[in-house]
Image (cartoon, rainbow, N blue to C red; front, top):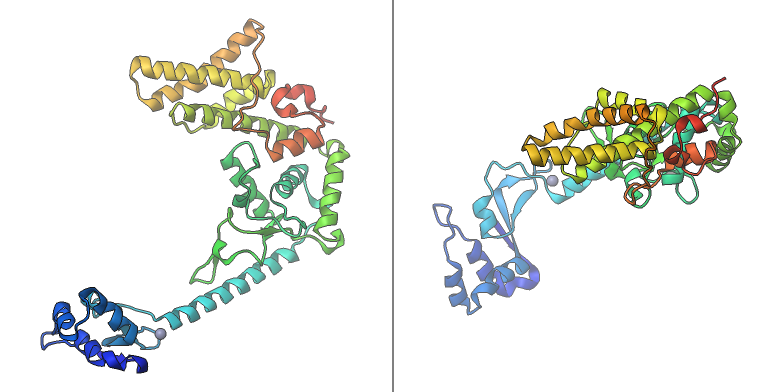
Length: 380
Ligand SMILES: [Zn+2]
């Protein structure tokens, strides 16, 4: 060990030397109380004085990169740091960090340039992607519309009926190169892998639109996209696709409500194909708000069944879909007036639903309140 005493700490030079002095067995030669007594300094000041006036360098541990000797912080540190430790000094760490940051930025630029080579125009967008993109611009667009903020930054609005669905939409838009990670995204949102690839956290990255320069930039593109959705060009161009998107969103609304209701009763449930089948059947005859009343009743029954029979929660939750199916059949057979539910405060209309049902189809949250077949255009 080498102890270096600072120039203006010379009056404590002896104390510092003795504090770090080792005996033949590598143990500290003097106890702190002995030093306190010898130098007439309070016991609890010793460490502070030594630290302020000297540095103790290890003669055996060095930085893995530049071999700079390890600095001991305290006697505890000396006793606990193993001699074979792999240690990198602060300077080397800073250099490595800035190299990694530069590598990330370069990689982000390469990825962006690649996306820009496959730039798109408004006319390339299907109605499905036009709706999703418009909703995402409304949800995450920066004030000057030059980029889309990280998805997670918006804590107040709802993007799609269901969080899982939102994730699927983002992945779909990114795979289709409709959105691409902005080269200016925060470096915390991406991880540079040693194999040269870059992992991106899709909830945390900033997105930008790799637009064809002929679109005249994101502002003019967004105006044209909004206009195209408003003029209902899509309805004449791609009626079938509009219908299928309406059905998809309505199904997601029901699944979101089902998950929410069961969750409220602490019943966990993962909807699968059977659930989709039953809910799709329901949506042919009832509005989402009516299907919600079936879901509400079935969830209530499942809880009662759980309490009454002492069965497992999973088993109780699994009765819900069959129950909904039976309710639909009875309601249809008896021509019942099925009550309509209001949207829950916790589940307001999402941006995706707003673009599709309000902007494109000109209803007031029709996707929730109205029967799909009443608002859907006739397929050409
Ligand atoms: Zn170093």
